[in-house]
Amino acid sequence: MKNIILSISVALLLVSCKEETKDKLKEAKEALSLEMKNAVDSVKTKAETALDSVKTKAKSDLDSVITKSNLKVDEATQKIKEIKEVIKK
Image (cartoon, rainbow, N blue to C red; front, side):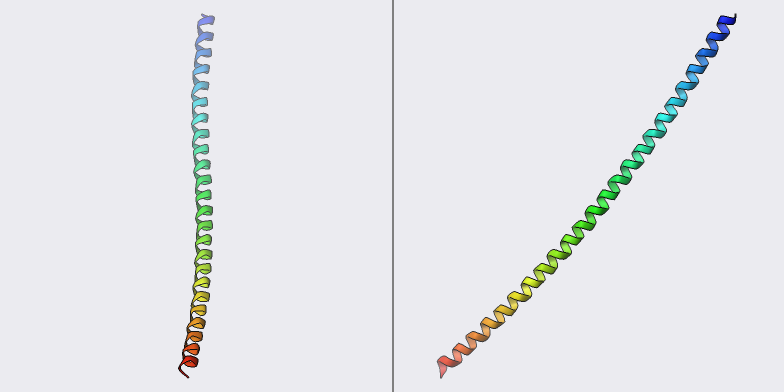
């Protein structure tokens, strides 16, 4: 009788420990999933910020090149006008 009670006790103890382990594994899985999601979100935010920065710099550089090109075209146009005036005289 003692052996039966002892066997049942051990079996119940093992079953209850197994459930706790499953719960702990589930909690660990959820925590890991949350950490991974946060890490991915962080990387995504940093990438978006870097991309925005690159876009802004590229636009600024392009605007600068366009402005300098327009100035050169204006200078060339002025020189052509001067040369035409000299030729007319």
